[in-house]
Image 1 (cartoon, rainbow, N blue to C red):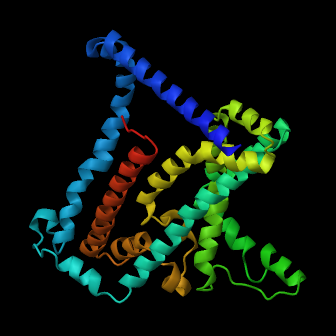
Image 2: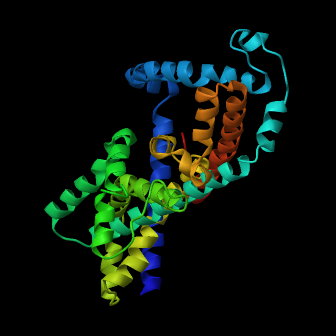
Length: 330
């Protein structure tokens, strides 16, 4: 059964690849660059404003990275402040809290990446087995709504829900005879709470992505599997999951660049000094050093280090996406 399904899948993929090559070849032969620009100039014009904004707010401020190599004094300015080379980076590495902050960031970020991959896939597969279209659309809408709610609002909601004295979660725990848990004030519970609440907020978006991928699976493969006597579980295992592998590989590799992004907006709104040991991440540390303690050179050095690591990880992830998922930026 598995062999016949795989053969049909391979034939379908080779057919699709040949058609894409043919269409691409015909497109290049029929249209010159001048013709393409002439036909698509309104689209390029529409891009002019957002590209300009990206250059102004994302690329021009990169010149401020020089602060990381200076003992920055706001009164002397960037160019008037004395040059200190790598002293700021050495100071960061000498801080006793640096290893713990790195560990917190990587721990929270990796668990978010893993669960934001596994949970949407599982929910998409479960919804794919249902036949009531109205129910499916209702569930999609409900689980997708939290994606649009700001963490500023959700933080207030979770503070009330998870309150150790009056929160509904602890009320339920107390009903079953369990002890109250201070989810946002306990060092061991805080990282887990951040991971679970982030997955709750984000899995609806991922579910829709994977449901869209399911619609692209060739239905002939299911018919072949039924003829070979496959039940619903075997169809899922031998047809559905292999058909989802390209998008799974793509989403996984593209998420590698977020290994050092544990979610500033979420953690900043829920973090307290009681849980700095397990909840403080790179972004909250940068904010505290730069905006509160006004150590601009130190915060810029930390941010620069994070950006360099993220750049390497993003480059690797795009290479892997290109190699294993046939993903191209252009």
